[in-house]
Length: 507
Image (cartoon, rainbow, N blue to C red; front, top):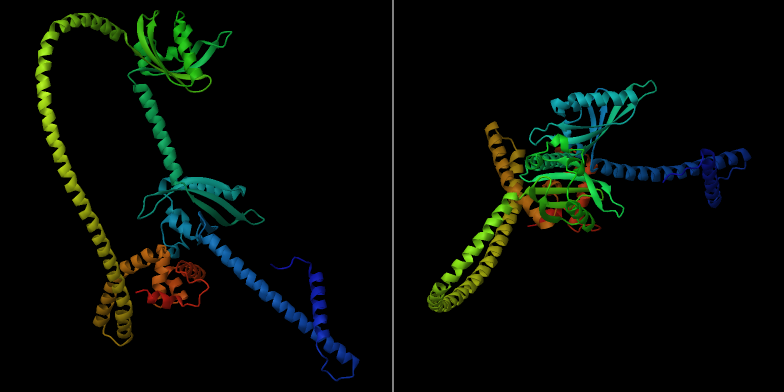
């Protein structure tokens, strides 16, 4: 890094270094004049100073270049979009992430108004945030939707910062654009979940309540609880309207409620696990089955159903059970005869089962044979796949090495318009054939990214860094970065191997 000393100290250091270098050099001037010698001495010192300054400048220039490369990489490949606009809102510069979020090629974005990519219903919100950032000088954040031609609209968050001069006039705008689609999806899912929970809560057939402990006895046991929320079935099962129950305690509505119910609430709160009980509520004259769930230290949720009809059915069933027992005793003798007949049938079925076991063994032997055949087919399919891939690689190499050079020679000659059109059609056809095969060959075989594959394909065709950068609409430094990554992935780092020659040798 460059020195942080003051200019006078730096000059003195350079002068001392220059005098030291002069003293080491032999005197060559034979002049006897003192003034000339002093002048020559000063000139030599000045020359040495310039040489040292030149070395310092070269070193500083190298550091600045490295810092510029590092900044360029950080800017281009940042996880968020960076956009610089003039005071009219026209895009002056944008990184790759920003262009991807907008869904446009970066080469057409500069000199475009950023507001044209915002959905119409969000334009006013964007302009208001832009105006406030310009007036206050403070960063403004806003979430809105971008319109993209081929893709779905994208949710983004814009952090807007205005650069102003001394008079407060906006010089330019700087924005950071972050993809918040996942966050919005989570918010929508949460809202949908809450809506469905509320609908489920209200539409439950069983009564449901949310209770808060409102009173305990001297030993800390629950003796009363207040209703925080109840569903529609609560009113149907208890006869108490919802608006009269919420905010009231159980004993305010039913003062004679049995301690049994509160004991089970206390047990659910202490045990931290659901408790299900059934009992008679004397004041309402109904049997209920209640399930209690702990929410936190002071709140519980309960569900309950009216089982009064079930209790009546149980009594009826008990009387029917005694009647059935008498009938069962009478029919036992008949069942013994039936059992004897069934025993004989079981013996016959056992014989059939033995035969089925033999059949199963035969089927297992056939299954083993099929598995062996299946394994052989898998090996054969793998060989066919490998052979197909080798043929594809050979086709790509032959097209690039045997046909493209001849087409280029023909294109360089004098051709009629019809011949030129036919030649272009042939070249596009060859590109359509070779491009997917070449891309799959490079990606599958060498684990390159799609962008690196595109750069590698152009290098293999003999394109220069400048030509590739112009074609892809990026800077030369970006292409140099991809070239380094390609060499690293192909294990060519620190090797004196030409990348183009190596790529052409892949056949």
